[in-house]
Amino acid sequence: MINGHKIIALCISRLHDMDNFRFISSLSRQLAEHNCNLFIYDITADLYWDEDDLRAEAAVFNLINYDITDAVIIMDEKIKSKTITEKIIANCQVSGTPAIVVDGRYDNCTKINFDYGTGFEKIVRHVIEDHKVRSAMLIAGIKGNPFSEERENIFRKVLTENNIPFTEDMIMYGEFWAKPAIACAEYIIRSGKVPRAVICANDIMAINVSTVFTEHGYRVPEDVIITGFDGIDEINYSFPKISSMRCSSLEMADAAYKAVMYCLNGSDTQEEFFVEPSMRLNESCGCAHAAKEDNTIKTQLFNDRFYRYQDDTRVLSDVTDRMTASDDITQAAYHLFVSVIHDMCCIIDKKFLDHTSDSSDIPTDYKFDDEMFMFFDTDSTPFQQYNVSRKLIFPGIENYLDGCSPIIFNIVDYMNSPIGYICFHFPDCDLTDYCMIPQILSAIGRGLGGFNAMQYQRHLLEKLEEVYKYDSLTTLYTRTSFSKEYEKLRRDISERHIQMTVVLADLDGLKQINDRFGHAAGDNAIKNVALALKRACPPDALCVRFGGDEMLAVIVGGCDTEGIRKNIKQTLDNYNTRSRSAYRVSASIGIYCTDSQSDTDFETIVKKSDAMMYAEKQAKKAADAARYGISR
Image (spheres, rainbow, N blue to C red):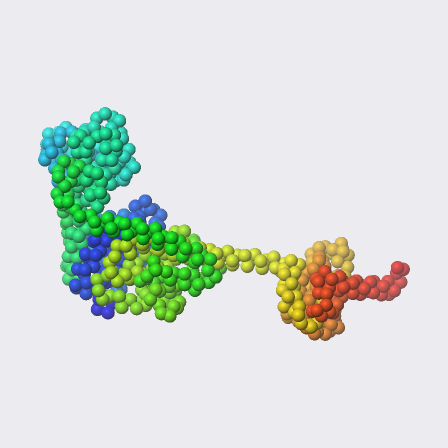
């Protein structure tokens, strides 16, 4: 309960389907009369084919806060995942929240079911008994499926009771879908044994079977009667219109409302409510269409949805591209201010803001942390982003509880990894808004995922650049990275009279050290000369390992050149004293001073400092020769 409003959670798939829309609209209105609000936890496609590896959007059911939820309705046949339904029921058991399962039979819950068996028996008896059919076939659903098996048994029963011999080849399997049903119809026609009637286990199969027979020159219903089951809207747009049994979403909404009231009053949770499908006789069985419908409104709705879908998809595609190319998370959010996106907020996982790791490896059953990040809110004035507690659902939710419109929750995911969730709070139950939810989710998910991937790539490039920016032995700039930094420095000081000092330090006797003591000793000597140079120069000096045993520093501004020379020598002398190595580490130093308006070409200043260093090196050799009496 929130502020005196009882909260009813509805777990569903494909909120944007017409039947689901009718169910929700009716249920919301009835609940509102008793100060109850509907919180819808929606996935955009059922989970039938993903039972063993659930999609990321199934994490939406982890968002249910049982502390504030007074009852949970689970649309089992819509979600099509026994795993999910059982998990939600178990959570209800722990929290003491009543669970109501629609179109499913589970323990520890109130159940609402269409009486499919009675309904299917009515349509079969209508074909066999009212139309006096003696030759019939059944295109069932999936072999072994409980709904399909029930309809197979009813088909056998009605035939037997009417003294029609039954054989196994009178049943084929269309898997409740178009392509397999079409294959069944083609097989029947090729066999040359076309029955008087083909009874289909659902409407989708019936519509496609009717089309196949018509295309092959058969007349429906004159040559072959065809019936379906479910009563979906499409049966009224097919030619001929399909006879079926209507499983009314409005009647189911009435039953769900009664079940909620039943549970809120503390009644037994094992109660089962039944809704009986009603006959919809049309042209495909030879019965006149009962009432001519005015489809003007439906056609206009379809037209609006079709063209609006095209226009809005183009806008959302542009939003995705702009989000992906954004420089930061705030800029990415600003691109969502478009007319297509309204009455919603998007809350994302704070881990997603860490661009030093790849967020696409989050498991699909991931549970979000208690503290989340408000990425975008259409009602935020002025626009702001901030941390938010997930327990609050979203700030200001109490402002949307007056009225009968539900609050809708969907997961935002990228590459099947949950990023966050969106809360839609449309002021009216509008099917066109519901139909845009999958496109909005996709656009934001791909936009955020693309943005994160780009930020992660930038992070990796920066790390890679760091690897190549500094020499691994000396930690000084590499020659390539130094050149880039030096050119930046030249541009910054080119128009000012600023002193520049170039210090070149060259390790003495590297070849002798390598030959006598090994390359590890040589590397150690190089490392200590680099360290001495870096310590002697100001902190902002550009220091580079220029060659194998040559280190160079560029100092901007005045400096004590002799002090630098002495400091390098003293640091190396101290090292030699401490290390007591069999070899001595020393360096020849060349220092060249100029100003920023003189010739500061890199090659030029290197040559001049190198010449000075070489002169010192030669002087050292001459001194050593004189000391030891070596003739030059």
